[in-house]
Image (cartoon, rainbow, N blue to C red; front, side, top):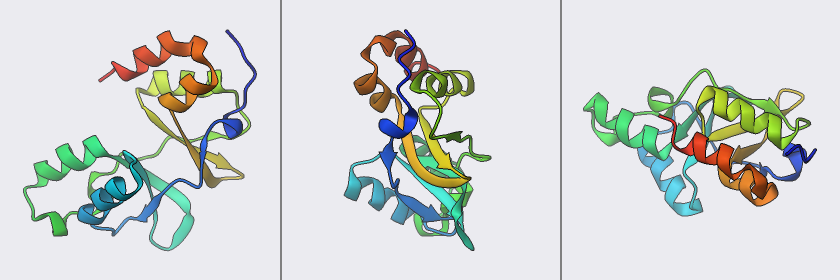
Length: 142
């Protein structure tokens, strides 16, 4: 099953980012505008430093749990953190194993500790269709 396809060749480049202090309202608007379901949260004072990730599920469930007005909830409040990343030089199979082991569906990709992309199960399936069973396992994890 090893294909030797590198993450950098199948990832989505230049993923959408928001600062820690971005309102959840703006995060959700970004999901809608770009037809995405995850966004990387960066440090307010360091745009190259990813500190978390917000998925549509995070925004809905964690945002609701606060019981605050939507405008008062920030990306930092609902983000999954610390963030798990992987280098763009690893193989798709290695990245899929990281996703499976950590029960995540969106994996930020770095190069020299700089955010350069994001990898999802869909990206992996298009690149390596033989990994369908592993991707099913990732998608059904809670």
